[in-house]
Amino acid sequence: MGTSSEAARPTRERILDAAMALFGARGYRATTIGEIESAAGLAPRRGGLYRHFESKEAVFRAAIARYAEKFGRVEGVWDESGFDDPAGALEAAARFTLEGLRAEADLFRIMQRDGTDFPDLAAEVHEQLVGRGYEFTIELFRRLRVAHGLGSEGIDFVSLAAIALGALVHFREDEAIYGRTPAGAEEDAFVFAWVGVWTRVLMAPEDEG
Image (cartoon, rainbow, N blue to C red; front, side):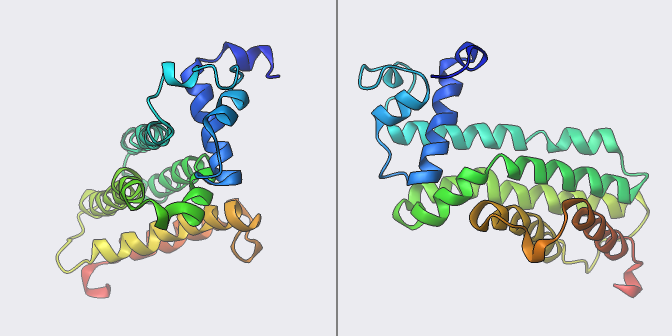
């Protein structure tokens, strides 16, 4: 039985949370509608889930969309941090990204286990989350250089973003899948090192790049 505070949450949100936790722990195929309903505090096999979603796949797609909506707020983080302080802007983006990725631990497990079996869903995850993440990172790097009067000609922002965001994703992915961070790195120290590296790379004059 859930707590009273849990029961007070909207049923749709409880279903999404329960489904993603079960998909991550047991696998998409192995999880039944009844198990999702029970974990969400609904009477199993009484149609409670179908009042909100037409299928198990619809639940998964809605969960992906919810992650994407939360990640879309990163532009607000940039606006709040500004670009006068490159290290501050990069740290804000890194911590926002890591926090968002922490919430996606179940999604990491699902894609590792079931991703190849569901190419359509995998493509949706990539489009709504992975692809957008790289687009945001490319734009952040470009805007930082422009804000400080540094040119962008000849700068391979795509490859830089792939390396930078890939490191943040890998940090959370190792936590989700293996239960430990890469090389046992402590999170604050990792962020400090990440910010230092990318501040030096992005603030270098073109003739030093």
